[in-house]
Length: 262
Image 1 (cartoon, helix red, strand yellow):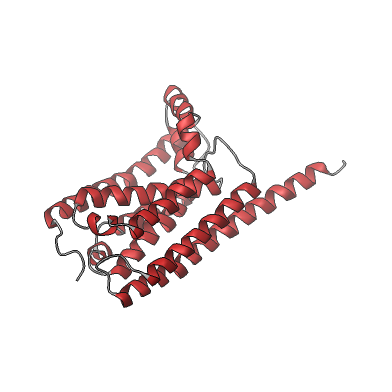
Image 2: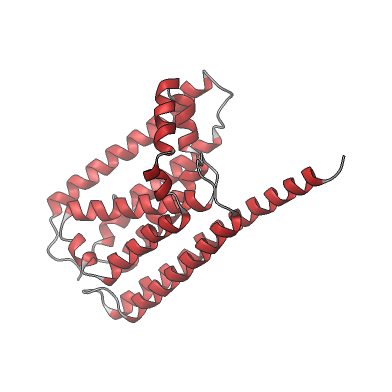
C-alpha cells in the first residue's frame, strides 16, 4: 500500500477548501457574464460549458473518488494529474477567462490588470520556453525525486504541488495557443518547436517512470501509470497540435488573401 503516513485530517480540510474554491469559480463566471453583457456585446454562453468542465475536472483531481484513490493507486494518481495539468487547463483556456475579466472590470481596474499582464514578470512566465520548463521540469521533480512520497505525507505540500501542476499546465497552454488575451506573441514556428521539445521530454519522463517508478510504487502499477501518462498525454497533446496547426493555417490563409492584388 502507498503512503501509509497520511494526515487524513489535513487532506479532508484540503478537500473542503478545494470544493469551496471550485463552487465559487462556477458561480463567479456566470456573474461576470451577466455584468459583461450589460456593458458589451453578448458573451457566448457556450464558453461557460468549457469553464464548467475545466473546473470540475481540475477539482476531481483533489476531491472525490478519484482523489481518494490516488493516495494508494498510482494509476488514479496519474489520471488525476492528466486532468489537472493538461485537460482542465486546455478547457479553461477555451472559456477565455481573462478576456471576460477585462470586459467585466471597471476601466481603472482593467487598466491595472493590463499593466500586470504586460509586466516583465508575467512576460517572462508566459514565454513558451519558460512555461514549458516550469511545466515539464516540475513533473521531473515530482517523479524523479522524493517529492512524490513527501507530498502524500503533508497536506500543505500536496496542495502546493498540485497547485503548481495546474498553474504550470495553464501557463504552458496559453503560451502555445493564443485563444485568450495574449500580450506578447511568438511566431508559430517558435511555439511549434517548444511544443515538440516539451512533448519529447514528457515522453522521456513516462519511460523513466516505467523503468523506475517512484519509491513505494509496485513495479506493475508503475508501468501501468507510466503507460497512462504516455498514451493519455498523447491524446491531449494531439488536441493542442491540431489547434496550433489550425491557427497557423488560418493565419497563413489570411495573410495570403491580404497579399493578393485587388
